[in-house]
Amino acid sequence: ADSKITRWSMVNNCIALVLDETPFYAESGGQIGDTGTILGDGIDLTVIDTQKEHERIIHFCEGDFNKININNKVKCTVNKERRDAIRRNHTATHLLHAALKEVLGEHVHQAGSSVGSDNFRFDLTHFEKISIKEIEQVETIVNNEIIHNTNVIPTIKSFDEAQKEGAEALFGEKYGDEVRVLTIGKFSKELCGGTHVNRTGDIGLFKIIEESSLAAGVRRVVAITGKDA
Image 1 (tube, helix red, strand yellow):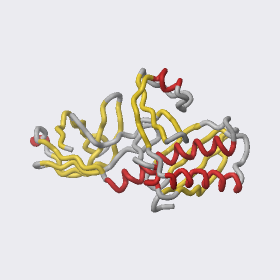
Image 2 (tube, helix red, strand yellow):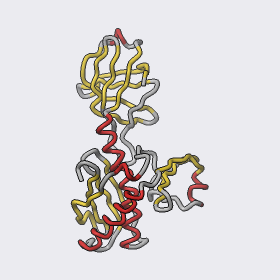
Image 3 (cartoon, helix red, strand yellow):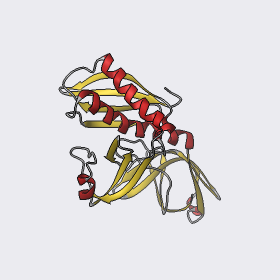
């Protein structure tokens, strides 16, 4: 994507840029920020993190930058392999959530998450250790949904409409009048603004690698997908 720099500053020895348009996803909703490159005439930057500050998306960069070139157009390129790994993991959190409800019960709710490129963690409300048998059941349900290669469809709807359709919302999260609803066939429907695969088959394979206690009544599951799995 071609963009223009609208603001810059130095933050903790990094060049912090704001662009008029950006393909970079800023850390939000548990998903880590994108990395990649910003290149132009006299500008050669590596984006090491992307964060959101109010409504502004800030690109933290290292490399060569001279403010003389601030009016030059720049070409932004997201690290595709890393982004694809994050997308696989993020969609898998939705499948995991639905599978945990099916195996453990409807009392299960998301209590936090962190979606990276190497793995993801999913915190859930549950009153006891998740047994090996239950973990195997969850893995089977998720992998069957992956094999079905279901379309992953994002839509923008009013918050009231999404609630009427039964979309899962994160408890305590503040939502606007309009929300993004991610629908995976009849299996999952959640509010989510993150990046996702186009079809569940893109995930490849899902595997839980860790289950632990986080706090009273809260468990943590760590899982991997794709090549890592």
